[in-house]
Length: 325
Image 1: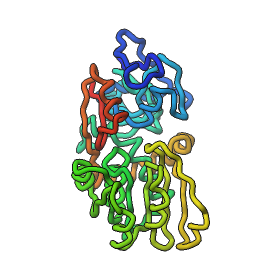
Image 2: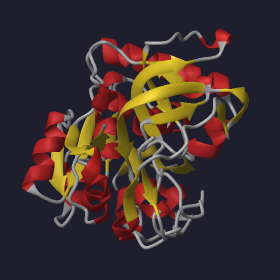
Image 3: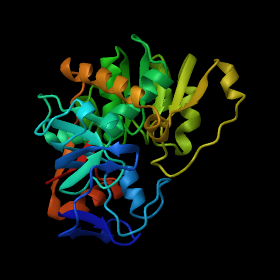
């Protein structure tokens, strides 16, 4: 089996193509018993994968290891009670070991790939779209008719958030840093777009404020996010791709009865199989209605897989980055 391996914790430059590795057994670290064995056609790369290449992510692996948490492909084998059969098109969350010709996923994190999506788009669904549905609907209590602001709106999480918010009946505000990223955000469904290096907080307030802020960026824009909220507004924190972890003076929450909400999907969702299936069903409905279709910015050949990590590491990616096998 071929796979991409992290050979040392030195970032994307430490990724190498490895040949003749043993194929994985039909078991998985996230669940006891047999998992779904997938012949991988595409594997997505996300910011946590890049952090893992430096040993900086909360879920650490010792080199050499195969990175990659999201795959799409066809079923080679599956447990009898999984609902899957050999040859089925699926998308799955593997947690690790996804950037390989064969990967294993728990049945509760394996989903039928809709016919309207190709393998690269399928590999782009689970981490980002499950995260933002969990963050917006289940944690942020987003309701139809509300207005959502999304930071980092041209990235994988950002474009997913814009699409899901539209599917839930919300209007959307995107914060981006360039003309190209504005184009991508509008393609993903942004109603209004403001620049992160401009007076975006004032522009948001002048246009009526927002009910929910989705923040995967962190950093020094957090206070202005609070100021941009309407009464009873919520900021939902999903990550810190900007590097800085903000602090808030909680007296600000009293001014408009606002909330700061954490949305940590990963470990929380892994312990709740039924929750994953519920989110998967809701997203399948949004795919069928035409709201959800991942924007794949780069489709990188397997042999150049390290370049996919560099695109994200160097902040050059918009939408999703996928390695195709």
